[in-house]
Length: 491
Image 1: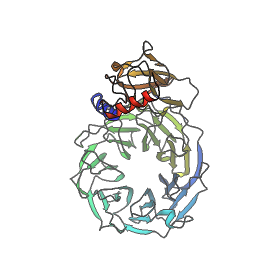
Image 2: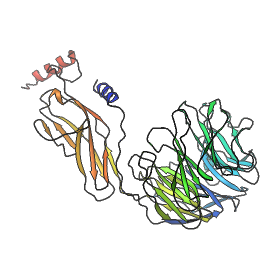
Image 3: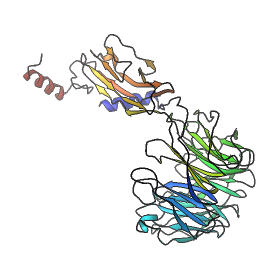
Image 4: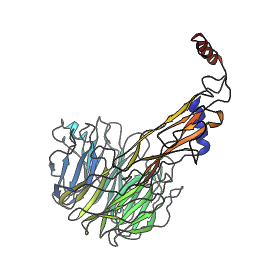
């Protein structure tokens, strides 16, 4: 009953995001790892199904892949090379064959094919990749994404073909094979592809960044992996990298493209119908190639990390939650960074950064941002009038700044006084509780970096003294509770 009342009340209040200003984003010293020549792409995923993230790079000039396995004590294994992957430009980690573990998929730019390793390291016995399957793509395939395009519960493959202004669709079948390849048209010279539901209809759409004609082609899914004719949007420059992420807090995926020739990124905010607002650009470094998106400082908003090929740097842009960003932080990562991925590589709850460098080097940056986070969210509580009702939460900071607390009832700060104590601590006590104190509460925790709110919770004090279990009804359970108390000799 209490949870039902709480849910109903919260619906009237409306969903609210727990947000903070966020501490300045900071990283530990760069760790440089030899990968392979011509690394255009890095992916993070669990390729040996041990519950830990691994890393894989596609090395186009070396015709190879390289992978590193996450270790139980942290860090990664030594590099393992997978040779004879002709012109490998992109690699993805996803289950597309329906097996017990993720598969590994690489695009082969110079042979117009894909290479698929079924069940990745599990299929190879954990020591080496199994014998791969070669799949036909279009001319000069550059980027591949895995997504369920026909809503059958299986991941399919979509490939951006640089040499043909098309996307190849490989729809997965129940037996782990694929339907005959089909194509849809996009703009010229695509080097990037993303999959997301742009119009909120429950179907996965596609967007391709077209390097040759300075546009993004959006393909809305009409059902069963069929797509409406493309709609092109100007992105303000030559799109080299493309990412979909919600940067203005409306729960719709926006489009972010890295404009190689003018040192900027473009943000195209998504409308409810799957169209996009005109691009707004933000300056970064020289020749941006790739954009990673995620919440780096645990403030509830999407931050960006941009790989600047000619600058030898990453631009880190803290998000403001409205589609705009704070001034970028520049982080040196060596020669020609080409691709970034954000993932919790150190398994501490914070997103770290892996960056593939074209000159045979990968950079790992461990996130050392001081963050506030709740370790215990407050639970609903109830009690009879005159009892003590307590709401408790717990929070922690990864830094040393002292924490301050303040409880809120609705949007109004709570103060100590008659029947209220602990309003400036992590435990609020209502006692002797009154029916008028029922309502929604949440805790704000703050330090020098800002503040974070807990989830909403509910305190319930019934108006009727006979409702001993605070269920909202006077029933036989209240009679039994009274009799138990009477026989126990309670006053």
